[in-house]
Image 1 (tube, rainbow, N blue to C red):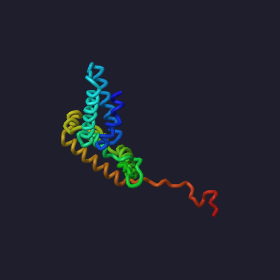
Image 2 (cartoon, rainbow, N blue to C red; image 1 turned 60 degrees about the vertical axis):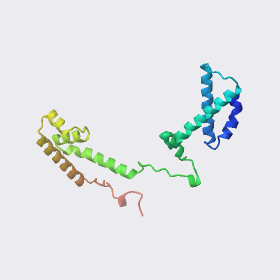
Image 3 (cartoon, rainbow, N blue to C red; image 1 turned 180 degrees about the vertical axis):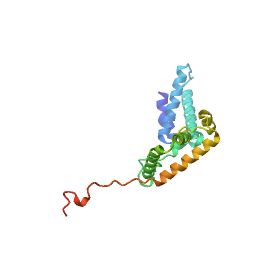
Image 4 (cartoon, rainbow, N blue to C red; image 1 turned 135 degrees about the horizontal axis):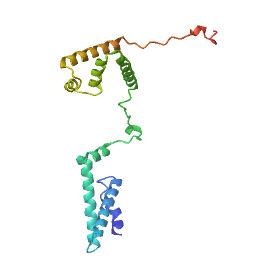
Amino acid sequence: MVTRARRELLLRVHRHRLRREDLEDCYSQATLELVADARRGASYANRRDLETAIERRFVSRIRDRRRALAGRSPMQAALERSLSLDATGEEAIDVVDARAELEKLVILRLELCQVQALMRELSPDQRLVLISQVALQMPRAEFCRRYGWSPDKYRKVAQRARTRLSRLMSSEEPAVPTARVRSEEMKGTNL
């Protein structure tokens, strides 16, 4: 009853410190703390002591919240400074998707498919070296120890593989499919 009676008065008195929702949250926290204290056996001499206790806890929660919003809690500060995506007018913002470069992604994926197809043109040793470098990221020393190669052989095979693959990539152009029947000869085009 005491917390209910003091609620509106304390929210009005401290309205300059936080938004209404934040004040209500702080007041709820302070009330829960008093209830928890009462369950642990705390008691107050009279109504005035209880009113003072709720106000002290409420003000303490307000200070905590203001410190969090001022930057003590990076998450709370970021949330406080964030803008709503539903905003209109001057507050409206445009969301930029860094991954929206669809054309670039498509080109990279096509090049990756091309590399995969051209890997068949390399010797088995060259494929082994490139796969160990790119996919497995295996250090040269470990590769040489595992497969019994000398560092010079590893270097030469890797260099030749990269050179051959880049030549194949530069000479490979996707062929334009040819039509079996010229468009002028197709039925229904008697213009």
